[in-house]
Amino acid sequence: MKKTPRYRNYIRGCWVDSEGGEVFENRNPADSRERIGLFPQSTTKDLEEAVQAAQAAALPWARTPAPKRAELVFRLGELLLRRKKKFAAEMTREMGKILKETEGDVQEAIDISYYTAGEGRRMFGQTTPSELPNKFAMSVRMPIGVCGFITPWNFPMAIPSWKMIPALVCGNTMILKPATDTPLSSVNLVQACHEIGFPPGVINLVCGSGKNIGIPMTKHPGVKLISFTGSTEVGREVSRNCAPDFRRVHLEMGGKNAILVMEDANLDLAVDGAIWGGFGTTGQRCTAASRVVVHKKVYGEFLKRFTARANALRVGNGLDPETEMGPLVSESQRTSVEQYVEIGRGEGARLAAGGRRITAGALAAGWFHQPTIFADVHPQMRIAQEEIFGPVVSVLPCKNFEEAIEIANGVSYGLSSAIYTRDVDRAFRAIRDLATGICYVNASTIGAEVHLPFGGIKQTGNGHREAGQQALDFFSEWKAVYVDFSGKLQRAQIDNN
Image 1 (cartoon, one colour):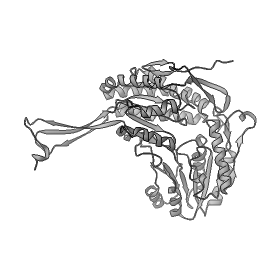
Image 2 (cartoon, one colour):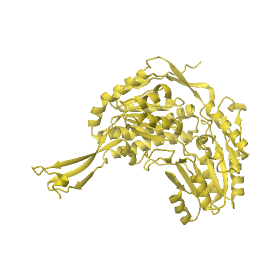
Image 3 (tube, one colour):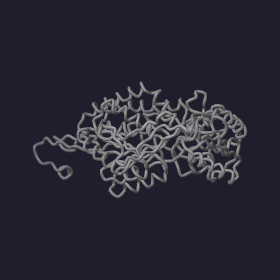
Image 4 (cartoon, one colour):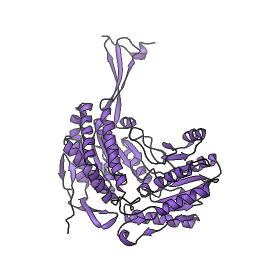
């Protein structure tokens, strides 16, 4: 029998065992009989070691010129590119999504490395005329210090890279706590950083539960910044924990995203978008298109095409290149999806496709569920209001554009939205009126690019953004600088009366 690999934490530039010696296992969601690895079930003592390591490295790293910090980030992108297929295959084994998607996950880490490496020479401040003579005024970016990252399992390399890459270029040190369902991808990312030559203590990885590591990290006074991606419920607790001492916190939370299909839409294109948005990553994306709002004039035809495509999707092991949708990440996630299917039935929605777990043949040992579509859904049903995070899509009829916007905006989240229409005026009205941080026209609700800000409003986020130049604003502080070369005391507004 093949021996299960055992992995360690990464602290002070070394791979080390947890202080308590306990481990947790990571299993393949496509075949739960396969153990991917054993990972440290860390304790608060391990977290304390990581904080101290990051604190010790903070000043030397902050004083390293930003272009030099960025050169390491660029080299990281180069190494990830060379190992893309290897890391993607291992990610599919531990998370379940198909190879094309895990390759895209690694590619996002490559893209953010290349993009942000350029920011090392473009961390621009402002220069401005002073209101007084012989005085120079400018602003510069400064690091914040030790950053703590709590990341989810659905994008186990992309999302950690969105957080750590701009933080490192801005001169911060960091501690990463990956999701317990997908720690291997974070281990691979940190191993690549180790090989590139980041100084000891700049990057630290501590595996373990939210209870033992995540929540204590949000309360630790030595961690000056927390960036969290996960559920709204946990995000609320993270925010409360950071509030007493006013530490900076970024929250990227849930979504209940809608595609609007107008009567003039290209229906084949809209169906493509609904399939990709609803069942890509088995619906386990915060940007998933879990609602499709369809004009009544094309409702019947759209639903017929949509259900036919969903029923034809090839569900299976993500390592098989023929597979179009993989398993759910865990048995508990599949159980949650099944509970929502029963809720939808109980609410009176019409089950148009799927609705059951898959237990036959080669898929019996995995956590598979059929692509599921509910039709004739009312906007206030729970399946149309609550994030399911699985392959379940609600189709809702609307009578006009205005009602479609009202339905789309009538949820507590505001991450992503899309409209399919050939009317340019209507498209721009949708861009204006859809209450989301991301909006697509004639494309699905997923597919963000790293040079644009990513994030949402309402209960999706707390105002900060990941990726793009906007990430630098979260991971740095502004310092205003005044240089007076007049040789005398000048009292700003007092002397400028």
